[in-house]
Image (cartoon, rainbow, N blue to C red):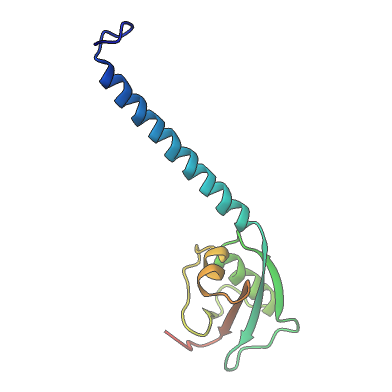
Length: 130
């Protein structure tokens, strides 16, 4: 039995139609997941700054930031609040443990290392942890 429009066997057409349907379904699922991730990344999270060693203490240590921001935005904000220039040393850590990459999103850090949508950022003028 063959398809009259393409003169191919009917099984090939149904197989390619099934492949196309599966591809469309996977694309729809991926776009829905991306939309869900984008929607969850736009909410605000609480960031707590804690001074370590001889670092100056902020007058206000709790701030809200969009979770879509990069960690670099937190570093720039902290430098601005402390009045530090780019050449002055400032070491920033998450949960007194590690220093994430500046291009890491706040959403990922809160999702992996936050507690109740709060992220604890420790900062120091000298290296404190590895």
